[in-house]
Image (cartoon, rainbow, N blue to C red; front, side, top):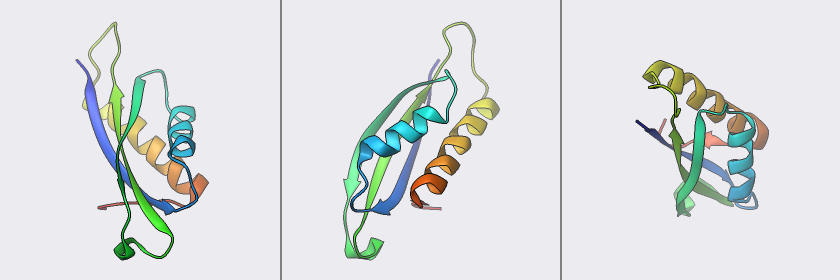
Length: 93
């Protein structure tokens, strides 16, 4: 079965979603099968020249059932990579 995780980042307006997607893939294992942008939100409440991008991350392995714990490790590794590389803020946390 697949495990889906959602996250949203507040980033500078000039950063493209492809940049975030690439960072997520580069800092994840083969368990991450898909990254999908599902929301772009812009508001003054986020800060000047900021936007929020929300992604769905899909994890699975064809040969076994994943544990929630191993997916959590993968997920947070990807989150931290995005935060560090583009000075992103995790929205809602």
